Image (cartoon, rainbow, N blue to C red; front, side, top):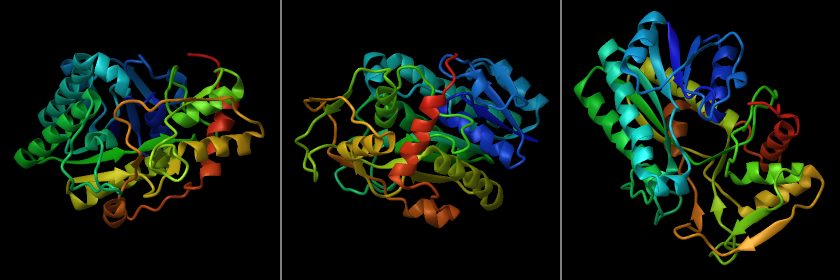
Length: 327
């Protein structure tokens, strides 16, 4: 038996593939390599280059590799890009997810883990935000992910099928062992941008908004180390196999750091000041977004190992300084 990891050559997917190898779980990766990098996964892992919406290819992979679980990362994830290209996002994130879920039902795969997002909440009125609030996405990205969650819930009610939808907050850091990290070109995540600026690959870090109702005036976000996040996925797979129940859960630490706190950590760990440019707020940016993570702790027993901001930054910066210059 094996686990199909779609988008397994991407940032989070590659970390999970390495984690599965550490657990002696056999992974098969499906990735079109439009943004993923083949070198980011272990060389002995089976990589199939193809489209997650390809019905015939999905059937062949599931049958040939005796797939008993699917972890679905493949998709697009940049909010401003989704606003400019909504139909592209509904195709990649919703239509192709439909094809994958349909293949799972057709071929008898009962366990499914979905890479969702805190963007399904939009601008939450109550902080920390709990999974039971009514989702109100404000971007096609968030809407496209919510639509897939709805499909999964409806499918689980109609078939012998269960899923875990993990709503990520801000995923950061890199593998502590240095095997993989955030390598996507043009990434927009704050710590990634700050680390590239430290390395001299960007001229500056832009801070959007200094007048929020927060202690230092900059936006506060809940960050989660990518290694802690992949531990959640491993526990989610155990949950599906043992409990045979579905679950929707936030993935964060239940506390936040401001933009300036994050930049100060990069300066502290990196040993030098960063060039920073202050700009007005972006439309729709909330002042503070922090997860309620009680459900995740209660249902899976998960406890974070890397929730120290300096440790997160240290791993991200170490990867940035040694990241291979290849595609």
